[in-house]
Amino acid sequence: DIQVTQSPSSLSASAGDRVTITCRASQDIDRSIGWYQQKRGGAPKLLLFAASSLQSGVPSRFTGSGSGTDFTLTISSLQPEDFATYYCQQFYSRPVTFGQGTKVEVK
Amino acid sequence: QVQLVESGGGVVQPGGPLRLSCAASGFTFTDFAMHWVRQSPGKGPEWVAVVSNDGSEREYADSVEGRFSVSRDNSNNIVHLQMHSLSVEDTALYYCAKGVMVSGFAEDCFDSWGQGTLVTVSS
View 1 (cartoon, helix red, strand yellow):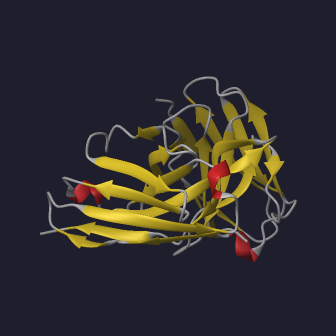
View 2: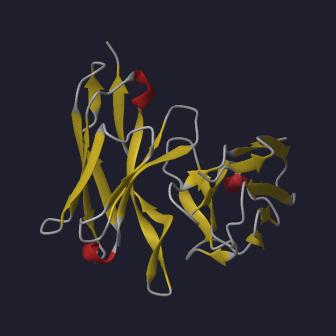
């Protein structure tokens, strides 16, 4: 199984900050990674797929980059509604696997 | 719009069975494999199982292989997850999910999720 290691596990930030979350796969997964946002009590919401493709309706302040084993999710200017937990997921091969999550909290 | 509505969760004793269902609407059901993903309290999502668009192929996470069975009814746009020999480690919110379509191919990256149905295994 492909392991996906996400970091940091949590971070504190203020509205307007630039936030970066990283994900490392245990083997080359090309660009087969997705990023999700999950708010308390809700299902995960897909933000980006195939490393950098923005899902319909997702604000452009969310961007993704990377290929191979190292990937990044960037929020260019954190908005109040962005305080949530973020997960990466590899879909290169089954079983698909998720990172451990990054909780973005208010500083 | 896409809707996925899970049902069938509840409290079950260790070793017992439970059957979950997911009613789908708002998309061409037979174009997509359908997945079950679970999330234990305070943990990240864990993929559980997938059934192909025509129901002929099924795959499972190692943690549920041999205990869970996924199936689908393409006449009624429903996916089922039959669970046996449940243990406390199976306690979680169970979601059904569909993949995002990329260049005509449904990837295992999930653009639609249900609200989840809670399974609690406890004596």
